Image (cartoon, rainbow, N blue to C red):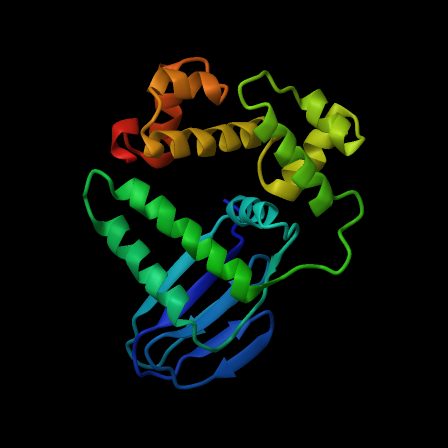
Length: 239
C-alpha cells in the first residue's frame, strides 16, 4: 500500500536521531515531539535508549479526498524533523485507544476522529502549490462537480455528465479525477450520497427507505450495506 506519510511522536526522554530525505537531526525529545515524513522520503529513527513512539500512517487517497473537499486540491504534507502539535497528538492518542477497544461502535468513532486528524494535517501541516499541476482538475471545477452531484442525488449520475462539467472526455476525466481526488468519479458520487444519507439518518425525520430514495441508493438494504461498509455499524447506531 502506498503511504502518504508517517507521523511519529516521541514519548520518552531519550535523544533519538531522525533521518529524513538525507537530512539528519539529533535532539532530545519530550512528550509530544513530532516528526512528519512525507511519502517517497526515506525516514528512520534511531535511539540509544528505550523510547515510546506513536506512528500514524495516512493513505494518499484519504488526504486527497479531504483536500478536495476543502478546496485544497493537490495539498502536500510538509516534512518536519521536530516540533509539537498538541491537538494532533490528542486526536492520535484517541485513535489509538479506539483502535485497541472492542466496543461495537468503535469503527464509527474511529472514522470520525480520523477525519479530524486528516483535517488537522491539512490545516496545519500541508501546503498547496501556487499553480495546479498540468492536467489536474482545478478547485473551481471540483466545486462545480460537487454542487452538481448534490443537486442530482436522487437521480442517475453518469461519468459523462461529470466529464462534461470539466470539459473533458469521460476516459480522460476519470483518470484525472482519480489522481486529483483519490477515488474514482463513481466512488465519489457514492461518497456524497452516503454523506447526505447519514445526515438524514441522524436528523431522524425520514424513514430509511425514504432516505435511500432521496439520496440515490437502490433501496434501504443497499444504503444499509454502504453504511456498514464505511462506518462499521447499522444505520440505527448513527443517531
